Amino acid sequence: MNHRSFLYYDSFITPLGPITVLANDEGVCRIDFGEFEERHSAYQSWKKKHLLRGEFVYDPEQKYVRQTKEELNEYFDGKRTQFSIPLICYGTDFQRGVWRTLVNQIPYGETRSYKEIASTMLSPKAIRAVGGAVNQNPFAIVVPCHRVIGSNGKLVGYAGGLEKKRHLLDFEKQYTVVPFTN
Image (cartoon, rainbow, N blue to C red; front, side, top):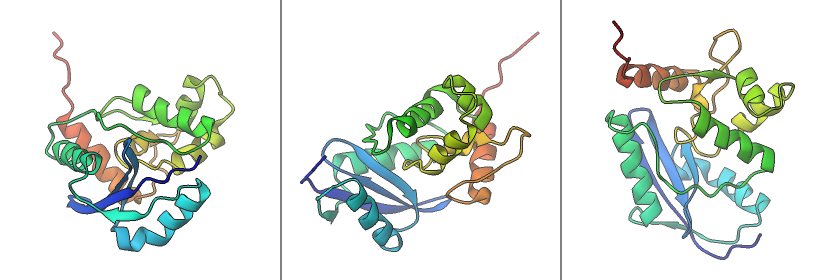
């Protein structure tokens, strides 16, 4: 897949530190913790791996970069529980399936285990493969890999670090509406 479009980016500050958004003319390609400059070599490798030819262009006003920043700011303000950003997923069919499952099957404020995700995907023995796909998630927060935990209920692995994972889970719990029961 050869794309000659630009890869627009911006880094902005969130309660969890800087986040970089990378987008093209079709949607968002990556959302990562950290500044663009510190991730530049990883982005070069990612671009090469996926045969992307676009140049990186700093553009905080590009429509998908701007939309992502707005939606993430709403999330951190406790006003957004789902995202409408168009995502351009570069990955294997299995990885894309796992990422889709995370978005569609783990509600805001809840968690699921790797084992539950594998079972949901009708691949109950693919727990390690699910873990590998979760580890390769290119959309921090928006594809909620922070909601995936170990079968024993413990926090395990997170690209942003376990401290960020704990913060996101605690944050979402404070904004989760508990249904009233008699």
